[in-house]
Length: 132
Image (cartoon, one colour):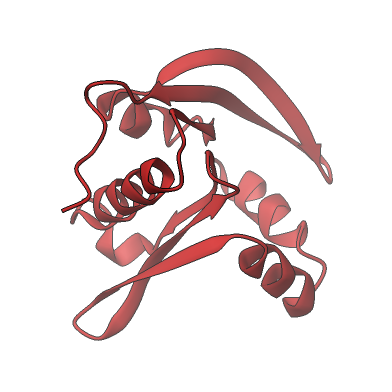
């Protein structure tokens, strides 16, 4: 994701109130490292990951994995048989490694930028994450 794309994404939240409204519309988990916020992820309904963010200084330290693992368990506990995500081009390899399969490729305009994403899905059958 380019700097311009990041700026367009940030600008899509008109103000703090609109961002707060989106984050509180679902179940949002916040990860901390050494007492400081390191990232967050949101489950929309029972079967859609709506947001995933990890602070740049803690990338590749397991924050995203811990957040998504928790959301997968919560999703299954809520009765979901699958979980979907609109994965950015940067996040797509992460979700692929976790067993998410690409379903469709899309782009969306944000201001002057176009953001590409892939709708990905993970089905829970016999391999559903344990609730322990």
